[in-house]
Image (cartoon, rainbow, N blue to C red; front, side):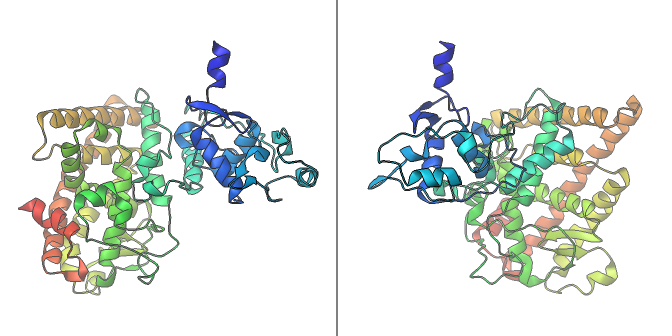
Amino acid sequence: MAEIEEKLSCQVCGDLNASKHYGSYCCSGCKGFFRRTLRNNRHYICLNEDDCPIIVENRNCCRACRYKKCLQAGLNPYLVHGDFGSTILPDSILSPDDSKRRKYKKRGERLSITSESSEVSMTSDCSMVKKENELSFEEECSRWQKLALNFHLDDKEMENAPLGYKRILPKMKVVDADSIAVYFVLVEKLCDNFIDSNANHMTSPTDEYFCSTAVSAEKALFQPRSVSSRTAINWSADYFIDSSGMKRMYCRILTHYGDWVSHIPEIFSLSYSDRVRLVIDRNVPCIDILLAYRSVINNAEGLVLSGGSYYPRKESDQRTVDIQIRPYLKRLTDTLYDEFIIPAKKMKMTEAEYALLRLLVFFLPVEGLSDDGKRIVRQAANFYRNVLSLNIQKEFPDYSTNEIMERMSKLMSFLPVIEIAKSAENAGFSIMTLFNIADLNGELTYEIYVKSQS
């Protein structure tokens, strides 16, 4: 019985719903991937030293390693047929020896292809990612970051979906505080580094970069690609923001938020109406803490706004900013810089602390939630608060109980600061939306900044 069960699992990714295809057992997803690779003469390069784990949750992360795993699992390229008979395999996919043998191969004849006959031998272990005690925090982050950069999407229907729906990252272990911290740090890195457009969202012409506020807030946050393509985010502070870049900056960052929030498991426990309310209402403070912490790690003299743009903190520099937008960004920047960026730098807030603190910013009850929704939000807030406390104990093992409590208290004191920043942003952006300053008027901005406040 154990042998039968093993055969019914996909020999490539481990999916349990497998059957026999191309001479081996694989799922329909890996079957389709293998077929498309051969029919379309696709060439893949691994960016992770040919050491990518291929499991069902992240099998799209690296096509190069997935294709090698297909060959290792015994999928036979010669059994892939085109629309008019056998597929004629390109030389680039086969090894030189296989290319020569192809000349003498009769149609319909079966040939066993092993990993040794593929172009690159499969030497690394592509099994499930091991626990954090086998990979350090930094190694885990680096490994999955590279996988994210190597990810490509086959399903066109998922094009506008948030990144969380694509299951690029492995699931976190909810009983392991380390795993939870690693997971949400990886989510931040994925949202920063995943790109699907080579355009520059601040400077590229409109025929190269697309963004729109002419969509509902619900569609924007559950189909973030409909608001902006995923260009290189670039959190450096290179130049002062101006009115021509405001809409582009806003759209790109909102897409970043939609991708981030889609990785939070608890939102799928909410009813759809509660989910929409929470995700829309908490977008402003969650974006504010994102901008503030990116300013911290990039040592910006102000508030970074993506695409290399930023709003300066120095009064003398602020006087040189585009007068159209100057008054509406000043209060937000001053609040975040003085009350978050400077203290966070001083205490050397870690990436994990920030990632968990951002979840606490998100999980605050909002008006209109059902009783069940409020319960889920409270439970999630308590859960991640405990995870944050455990993370501090782990990262600072020499701390006394009082020192741990003091650090936890400092982190929690940032929550009201972010709510003050939210009020500042709502005040400024609602005016810009109503009077179409910097081209910010649109259904999306109206729902978020005007309608939600009425």
